[in-house]
Amino acid sequence: MNSMVSLILNVIWLVFGGLWLALGYFLAGIICCLLIITIPFGIASFRIGVYALWPFGRTIVDRSPRGGGLFSAVGNVIWLLVAGIWIAIGHVLTAIPMFVSIIGIPLGIANLKLIPVSLMPLGKVIVPSRAVLPTYRHA
Image (cartoon, rainbow, N blue to C red; front, side, top):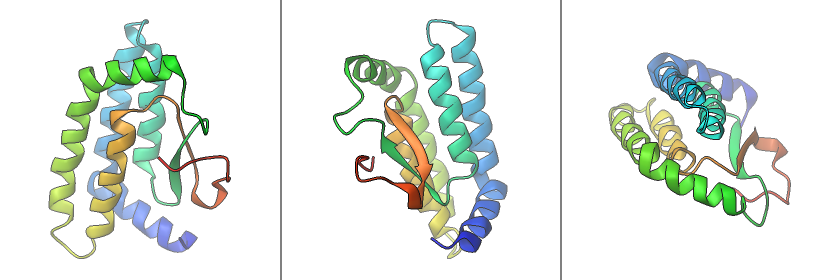
């Protein structure tokens, strides 16, 4: 994607929902870090929050081509049950009004692209779209 188009879409995204999504992820990250045992979830939440703030021009990939390992899998199941489902529902509900206008369609698509990482964030990394290496598999 052209860097100028990415910039324009990111600014529109920031104004029409990205800031609120990111703040929600940051709040969840703070709560998770305060609870100490859920610090890995807090770190993942901060990572997703930064991505939710400025998503265009970046993509989410698996950390390892073989998956995230046993701890990531168990952590993702816990995350899914405690927070992931609710966050995914929030993304669907905020994507619907974005699809109403022509200019909002890319924003709605970006919102829906956040659902997989909001459901299972552990074992994922966020990289520039043009820097995706062959060893990474798109999430």
